[in-house]
Length: 205
Image (cartoon, rainbow, N blue to C red; front, side, top):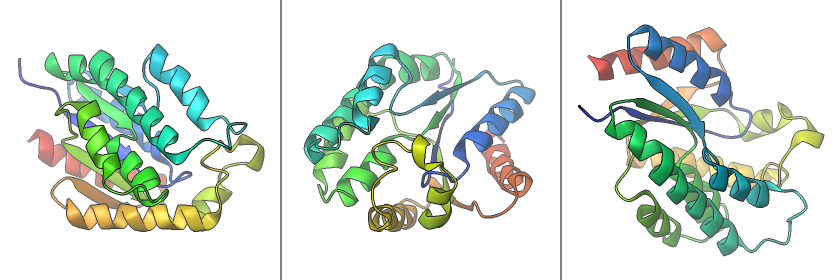
């Protein structure tokens, strides 16, 4: 059986990823493909426990390298237990965030540099996305879409941090144009969904 399609979604918090991910799953299933949704950090019992630790707003003293390693550890378990097995049997995997998030949030945003990419290449063991949709929205607008009392530890970071992350996303988009598709997330849900479906149609042939 052919390897399944691995699709990831990236973008600032509040960019509307969840809505588009659910729509894309329905679209892919309507084409006769088996698709699963998952998220990062998370996707497995172990990874979800690590998610609770890394996003807990009471853990504000967390060291940046600790943060990066926790994300990589959650990802390693996720790839081994969920993503790779699903792809190996031909299922389509749609994931809310993946390795690009670590590169921009910890590598660029936290100033940890290229070691984040290296750590995560060990974590994913050659399992990389076929296509990544980068939902682009001004971080200031995205931040306003999330209620203050619902914001996690990273969402509570200052706006300057989120702007640096967004700039890093745009740099990755330029660096990997064959994989990362920038999508203007300031438009209507239907317009965004239509553009995403057109790219997937081309990929599926």
